[in-house]
Amino acid sequence: MKTEFTLAQLADPDIAEADKILRKCVHCGFCTATCPTYVLLGDELDSPRGRIYLIKEMLEKDKPPTAEVVKHIDRCLSCLACMTTCPSGVNYMHLVDQARVKVEKEYVRPLPERLLRAVLAFVLPRPKLFRLSMILARLARPLAVLLPSSPPGATTPTFFRRIKAMLALAPASLPSPGAAPGTAFPAAGTRRGRVALLQGCAQQVLAPRINQAAINLLTRHGIEVVLVADEQCCGALTHHMGDDADALARARANISVWTNEMARGGLDAILVTASGCGTVIKDYGFLLREDRDYAARAETISALAKDITEYVASLDLPVPQGRSDLVIAYHSACSLQHGQKITQLPKDLLSKNGFVVKDVPESHLCCGSAGTYNILQPDIANRLRDRKVANIATVKPDMIAAGNIGCMVQIAGGTSVPVVHTIELLDWATGGSRPGLN
Ligand code: SF4
Ligand code: SF4
Image 1 (cartoon, rainbow, N blue to C red):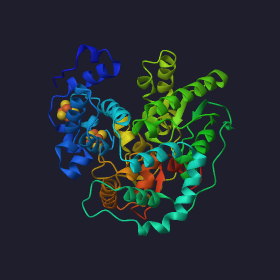
Image 2 (spheres, rainbow, N blue to C red; image 1 turned 60 degrees about the horizontal axis):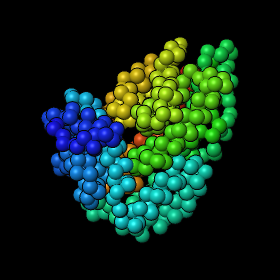
Image 3 (tube, rainbow, N blue to C red; image 1 turned 90 degrees about the horizontal axis):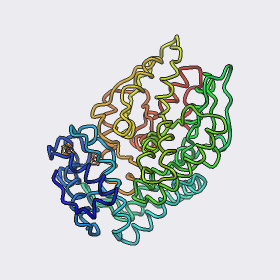
């Protein structure tokens, strides 16, 4: 794609990066076929190619984004299916991230939307506050019936529709909190390694059982696990909302505490059980490339970050003797398959450990979770969830496995089939307890 940035514009490293990305796009449109919003809405401006044009125009003209541009960027799930499909290697992720930052800085959203986004950005990364908000949302949930629903086929939600979606996501009950930050779990027997396990923010409130399963499996196989004190939300939530100042501050804080932990006791890896977080931590090196104080350490941390399944596969665990006849539908989270290019590994681990693993039709399409997307764009998100659940039902599973809490909550909202994390099944198959689902 031909670009027309001025030399002055190209002096900005972000614009130079955008120029490099845009020039790779050859307008072929292959990406449109796998884009969930294009598949649902059929509008070129809701496809990757259409959005790339809009972003190019917005950056070249260097004017505040219009409402129309913001609408189509907001509808993008950042699922990154387009990056998997693109034959030219267009890094859509870095392009849309940059567009979101410009929208956040230069576009004035209506006041109720600004307030809602500010509340989400403040509450979600803070586990104690998030827990309190979930309790309040549960109490307020009966009132949701009073709020208006969207008409069929709607794609632009009202403020109250978003509030209704937020209340619907509150669970009926919350589990007790998991282990406290700063806790170390010693390896059983001879120590083979030492890792940090990202505590996450929403996940530690909604399903602390996931990290507990990871801790149980790892320690049982000789790996010491540390929950590093003063660790923060990885920054993914605010990063995807365009609030780079907040996201980068969190990245720097995490890099500092993990680097200190490495110096104190050594770390073989920083493990992540929520693939949405893993994708962003693996990108810290890029996000902080212009920061002289942090660039080198950010690269080191990104290289150490591993999805839990990557690390478990590297341990080469003994194959269990017994086999389960449970049929597992494996939901491939977008952040894992498109963001981190981890597709076959979790399925191989599950098969090797005795489960009957089934691929889900249209597995490349997002379930609609996408961070805060199912609150901010609930109508598109619900259509994607219903499509995903219908596809899952075709393989008649006993359980659904996924590697990302956002997907687990989203899918569980549309089915009665138990939804578990891949690591819970691996822990169970290798001597741990059956997933408790609470
Ligand atoms: S990230 Fe997903 S929703 Fe956004 S343009 Fe790419 S494929 Fe479409
Ligand atoms: S597939 Fe890649 S090169 Fe083709 S239009 Fe999409 S982003 Fe551009």
